[in-house]
Length: 413
Image 1 (tube, rainbow, N blue to C red):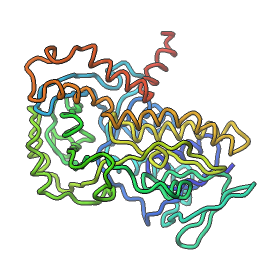
Image 2: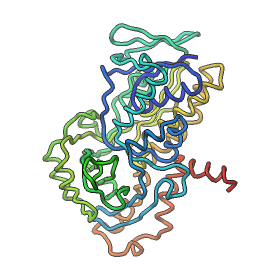
Image 3: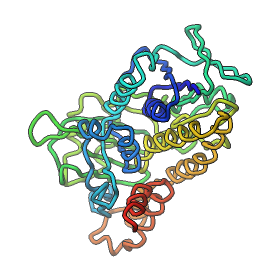
Image 4: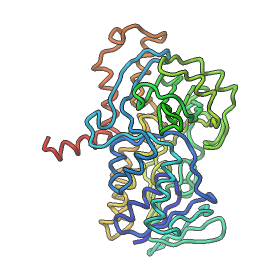
């Protein structure tokens, strides 16, 4: 079997590694002229780290990221709501690792080239269409070239050309009404040095966490993201999502004062960041299916979701694992793709919809609803059982307990 993958992001590149591990040939086609290590921080939850480790990348991932040790949920005015251990500290078999998205993409790209050869990732190939017959699928690219394979996997992001060809009337992404500003800068370590902080609910949120070592002693490369509701859910997005769109300093100045935090000076952190980007928080409505014959979707092309619960990249990793296993175990590519869709579409649909409500960060939204001006004792606002129910329900729905469950299985627990 031979597979062509459209898109050299995290999902596409990891799919290539998984297919290679299963003995399936593949080539990745990327529209950009080169692989650009763009973006800021993302989190690889334990279930995703497990799969990255399974293809021999854990040591390399450790070199470029930070093993997140704890997560603090807080009111936007700074009062702590809930503190949870992460990764191995929480009983998982694998760590949670926070990392710069571009560095992770670069790691995966290098691994693909090392294992599959330099020609396995072909840049400058923008998909413009494809045709299928009983034997294969033929892709057409903007430069006039074509490629033919048994299967085409569209891993080309929220603006997927593959998805547009399968569902031509879908239209643009759906905007949440939230604008997001993001950046990463070296900053003195705070908390344990491995602490992730989320302040604020669905109307205004600030997320800060380390994603790498700093060049000066006692510092970390630190990711920050500020999201504020500036429109209504479902309105047309004001701009296209683009990792290179610079933020307007006036927008940052207008909203930074919404938050209070004793762990770090977030205003100074944001001000000191050289490259600050802005994009609308968007997703798409879940599809009834991803597969047409020998063509399917994966990652953000299949199920773009709001960045809640650290699930975007992780769900693409799970897609790749599931898809590669079915392609290895089915002689008929079409049946393999439908089996993958049956496994993955219901789970990812649930996550997309839960993320629209706030994901696990709904704990903050609920506290701020009850105590909009803050509180002195969290127990006067909400019970620990209520908080745990919100977070645990999301974790189960997203598959976040899989690494913990596997550990219990291995130990006989």
